[in-house]
Amino acid sequence: MSTPNATAMRIIDANLNRAREALRVMEEYARLGLDDAGLSAAIKETRHALATAAAQFEGGRESDAKRATARAPDRSGFHSARASSDSPNSLIRARDIVGDVGCEVGTSAEYQRAGALHVAMAAGKRLSEALRAVEEYGKTIDRGFAAAIEKIRYRGYELERRLGLTASARQRFGHVRLYVILTESLCSGEWLATAEAAIRGGADCLQLREKDLSDRELLDRAKRLSKLCHDHDTMFIVNDRVDIAVLSGADGVHLGQDDLSVAAVRRIVPSTCLVGVSTHDVEQVEAAAGEAPDYIAVGPMLATSTKPQDHIAGPQTLAAARRLTSLPLVAIGGIDEHNAAEVLSAGADCLCVCTSVIAQADVAKAAEHLRAVVDQAAAGPTSDQ
Image 1 (cartoon, rainbow, N blue to C red):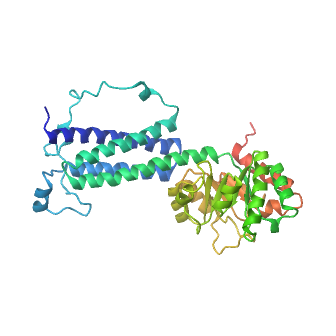
Image 2 (image 1 turned 60 degrees about the vertical axis):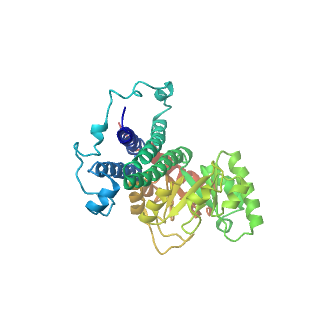
Image 3 (image 1 turned 135 degrees about the vertical axis):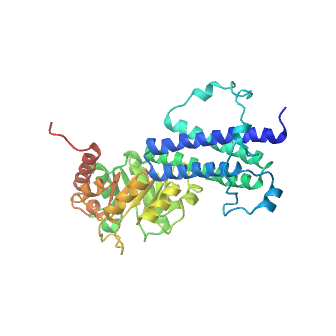
């Protein structure tokens, strides 16, 4: 029969292997399934952190007391000793595949996966279970190691969340191509008729942005727009106001940099409610991607009188954002049918416009022209062959 310490080492070894495998499965989906550079890098960093913790654990620690008197730990809290099969904490020496009674135990559910995302999310669950086992049994040998694993476990929870929400966002918002902002003062005609015309022209998402209405009037307008959009299978978003979005039955809410965080909003809204975020530079995009909203708006692309800003993000910021995340990217600010193709080529999934549609004499025709540009870009380059 194994000694208590040997038992703990076998459990730690088995679960470290399981955790590393789970992280690799998650990383491959983020990298090759989602093409998400930022998320795959975050998973890779966690995998390396786990490998470092394991190597430092194996580096020859006999006990907490002996370590305290022998030498000081480095800044990470671990010894800088090289892992060796001769170490008292050697995981290789603790491994016993032949004697593992669980090798032949399995269930039919282990071989049932609905798709690549299901595989990745199952790996996320396996990661948290494995790290919990490593942490708990690690406490019997080295408290510093157990504390390091605890931190990695929490990182694993966050990675699982980001992975699932990123995949979900692409499914829920990925079909949106033309996103029109509705502000009555900028409309060429009556606001509801303008909304109807924009939908007729091909807008598949409308956002209500009104800063000066009373709460009661804003809610009434949001309810009317919500019904119109749902009758025409069009997405409806409310700008800034989480309460109005929820009360009106909107599909989502759009947040600015000074609004509530994505995490805070998700605790308030129904799980079906989309959350979008405005960004203006690469740092804001990176921060937003970490929160895993349903889409990220990047802008302004060009100078615009609708919402003047000192800083113009431009298509170059959009291109940088595309390299950071696979979340749906919405280009906004100064876009019209003449520059839309350039903006789309920088990496936008969707165009967000205001006056180039709602301020035009023929709103439906203006929307139709922009939608044609978006659809052509989505179809890819044409061939004369």
